[in-house]
Length: 90
Length: 198
Image (cartoon, rainbow over all chains, first blue to last red; front, side, top):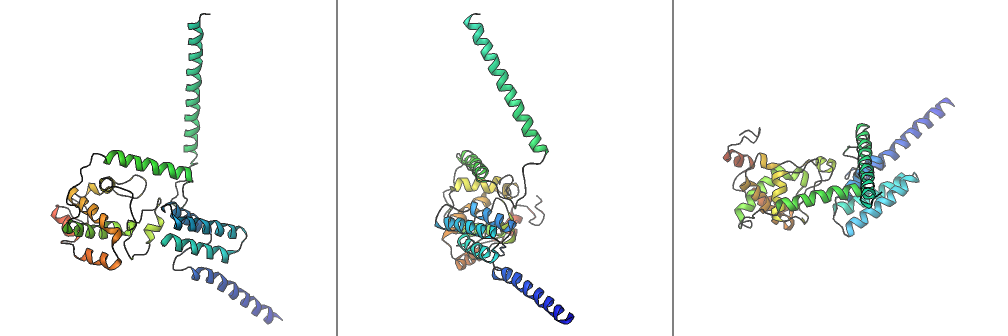
């Protein structure tokens, strides 16, 4: 029984670690993270953009990322931030 | 009471009220400064109104001060452009990037962000020269006029006119075609590029 609990704990820890790693790795090339620092950096990037389609897209994606972060959906948040970065670096 | 005396009393009240208001505003402002209320962290962007205000202050300041600058007639000269390319690559690209260059750690950490100059600039050549020469307070933009003469700074401005139309390979080619490296140009000016001494 102890062995079973221990193996489940190890498995659970590994699963959690891999989920966390996947968020980071998926956006490694842009180094964006769905947290307050990442959000602030993106807002600073958007402020510096000229008015136009790219800025509108980036702003919309950031709004959706914030909504997802508020709902604790970190995967969707990271996806929207990634889309915002693509618009910024276009 | 005569009309004149009534008018004088009203004026005195107005002056006292305005002075008291100004004093109160100054006290509140001083208290806010002393309490560290304004967050100076570069990773926390300004609110939109503050950002607009800072931008407008910068734009108007440059426009007014650059208005009388005479732009050299030979800004399109190929040698001048190539010389400016070498300097841009050495002095500017780390923050302002270049064609084919990914954002750097510095460009991503500066606030306000340094504009990517491969994109179209709203500044005139005279304004660009002023900015390169004098820099900007509280932005990370240095005053290159402290260590470089006007001729070299105009070379950079000459290159900036060309930059938005360059592909990554064209950028590399034009940097390599420079008659001298940045350090050689500094030596010509009697400056040690590694120390900035004269």
